[in-house]
Image (cartoon, rainbow, N blue to C red):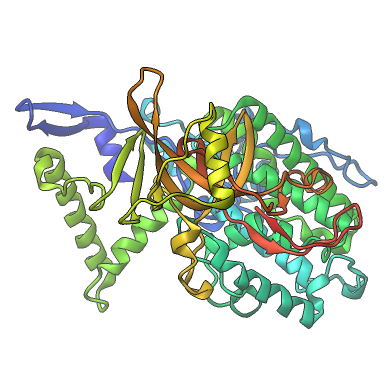
Length: 538
């Protein structure tokens, strides 16, 4: 911090090798990331266990009338993070004439001391509390811990309360918990490799080796479908509102409509959570952890600072992990870590000065065909072209139209998408045993302005006569489509459970209609209509 303060005053001298000039660069501190206990060293607040435990400093609240309970607070109307009272409260705190006054004012204001950030040049930082932010990565772990503790019945229970009366504590039954953990593990092969590490059996690993990313994938990806029909509907519907609101805010780009909808979902979830879990009972006050309140700040903070996924701690944690792996002298880890960090900075500087030192970007694999707009067909590929038969030939004929003759084709195994994902085909991926598969052949399509889903059988290039009477290639995917999702279940789940049936038909579409690779996980729900059948959840 003292080094940053000095650079704010003097500037950072930088040599631009390309122009052989030296200039002064001004460093700016925008956001600070830390967990709840660590944040108090930065912002000087009381932390998550204090009277005003909000890390965004939206209070403090003083709504307790003498002789009565707290008044209700409209969660849709809480102040923005960075209360206008912060400066006044800080002046009030530091003006305390005695230690006794300091202790009293600390409780009243939610502040303990002037923050370190005030020592920086105010023109080079946002200042407190505006530089504080929601940490969506740690929020993932905290919300997962809260919900699993409630559903498992392991969260603290008051003396006048009874865990056996908790209708949401479904995992008290060991058989249900074990079956649920097995279902989580069995979903792993159906998750594409681009989803990173597949989740372990949560019933066996949640207390030992479950990582934050696995919790995010479990809580905000798999669980809405896996808990349908297990968690009572009242609690399940409430949970789905949290999931969909969270999913919307995990986009790198978000529309105004999505942002407003996410805010409504998260505030509704928080309000209903307090009614159906906490139920205004003193013995259940421990259910209302700071992470519950923090969700209501996600959307407003997005307006001020951008999507929270863009400044989450995932990148910083990955960097720390990379440096940790480079430590070679465990007897003196901190000195070694500092040396590795310095060496990495030196390497980055050299690469900046002499870009040729950096490795060239990786090109396409041998035999691949660049088809434009960030798409490429990747091998394997049939050596000889053959005529399609059966439903595949009919689908190609329908795609070509105008009575054009179906040409001979060669099957291609994979397709590179502009987002970096690689779509596999059933033709090649089905050769691997399921336990060694990360299924990447199910895709989301945009057809006629609508979202559709399908399983790729193979890719091919159709040779046809263009409008200018010249032969040209049309790159297409041969697919087995899925049905539209069950609308009742979709609405009931706040659009978190997209449950489809795979149709027994073949369609052909241009590969550039493929938007992304998705997971299609088998499940057998009892739909709101009462029908029980095998389906796929996206």
